[in-house]
Image (tube, rainbow, N blue to C red):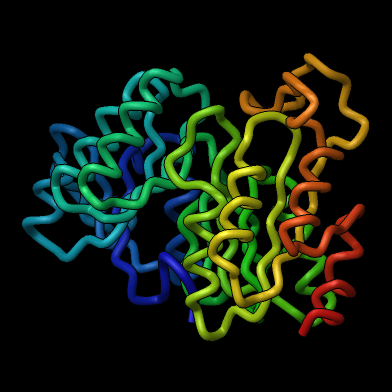
Length: 288
């Protein structure tokens, strides 16, 4: 099994007629993702044999929709997310970068109030290996297997997935939570889903400097006692304080936000700690 999306998940793409949206819609469809529609305001047509609807509501009225992948400009992301959720879509993956923080806060509130899962913004998306891709990742790096990945970094998600695939362990689902300060779904919520999945045998969490998301995961591991082994890798051991390291949320603002501090608290919560990505397969093998 996998989490969030499988081969039967019906997906629409908001912003799927733009340059990036159309390019990745084609790749998602080629991978096997069940793309049932594209949404472009004011347009009703067909694009690459995919129906184009003028609104999410119109798409929902004409076909079954489980999820939306959103490729709209930053200023439109909040409205696009709201449109999807208010139409009844229960999973929204917001690829868009540079979404204003205040908009991200509102997006998260809208999703939670309507029992929808928001991944992102500023994410490469998610992929259930061999079944469905809702995002922009190079799918050849993600071979089906038994390890779930939850990450704050798109690039490191690729690296770890490739390492797991080459080792023979493979991936069930990989989720990039997003690199912004405010995101829709955090480590603890996604680790819980992996812990409930029968085919996921181990969970890899990829964190980075800045913020408190890893600390929140450590508290969850202590309180909830996740049954499956959790392997943690935190990027940014040598990151200088006060510098933004690629992501809006990756800024060291105090002692507890350094990579060393996060690795220490995760280790104390029962997670196995990897200093380098290539250590992860061995740690998984020893834990199973």
